[in-house]
Length: 115
Image (tube, rainbow, N blue to C red; front, side, top):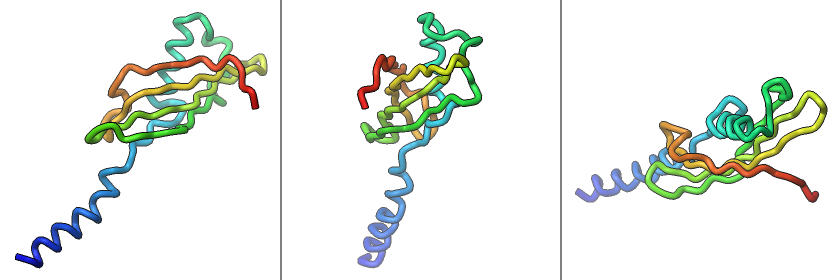
């Protein structure tokens, strides 16, 4: 019985890091970046003709576990324009290991970077 308890404790320790790993929803084709583009397009900030889609970027800047298999994630998403300018957003959304779209995203348009 003692050995069984030790084995279970050992397996729990080994399995914990694997199940506690935050999902990776970064990348220009993933949910946060796609939703940012849709919101910006619907708001009239971007049009398909203006965006240089080959160079858009999305990188995760923060991820915090907020529940069982649920993380709140923050992304910096950049849309380079063919004119040379760029449009930057901060996207906050919830994700699980199965789905990057566990909540509606909050999208903030960066108007000025100070540093």
